[in-house]
Image (tube, rainbow, N blue to C red; front, top):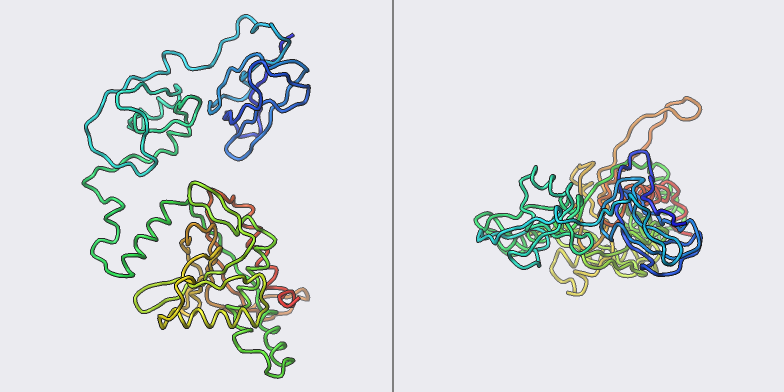
Length: 401
């Protein structure tokens, strides 16, 4: 007897899911417990398995379709079986087709421009049509990601309405500015429009780190360069170690492809006379504190005096920016795209706390601000990465292991 494949409920707040990919086609043999289709909710993905041995003989919901929880998406059974009577297919009907007329209004779309021909029919789910009408969106401007280009609820939610030509467009960004300032304006604007940026903040107790610096300086008899024990150097080392444990943060995403890097090339934001540059310290994962310190001093000084080699202005896989000297505690760094993360370092502050023995002691805290691309990295793993940086800064002897 034919068995139903239904849209599962993956959480208390889930009311519908999206059919992402059918692993099997109609007529393909399936085994009991074998994944037939993968679906997703806002936060999770899940494989729907066949409840019996047989064949997939009906697909009710195409890839990209959004289906309420516990509703039918397909059937498995024996070859030649028919869909049980009374069942209604949820595939697109004539009511899901909206006729659109050719428009002569000249617009420039912020999102991916439509590729369908003018005057062509547009397929949309009833919910998507209702939402678009309520928001005043033109369905012709929305690109559907459902089966056969069908517009879904998510497509409407993610749609950014096109801007009239008379308003500011990308080519006008930086108008009235000159030189590096104009380049920076375009880069910052591009970064914010290319990624979904979110910033996490927290403070780190660096009391042990400051003691560690003094201890290491005393034990080295002056053989360690001052740069090897600077906060910037120690921060770069801590971030490097954290990136090795969280390689998903050591990556690029340009909207088309995600590339994870084995090498860690650290960008360090530097303020120069007419703007901001990000020189790169290459292969920091292969360097000790002294080498990192020397590299930091070299690239930052060369960036300031204009002698930095051209190939060291790009290629970083993660960036650190420090506004501590300006007295700033927390801020929201803008991603150096296509990187997925940038760490902002603020000014150290002192405060009094009670220790485990209920005695008052003074500690030093360093504010950190981690901006990441939420398109690729969720909040929980980003928080874990920030916690790992904190761990290394609060256990400084691990920085020399």
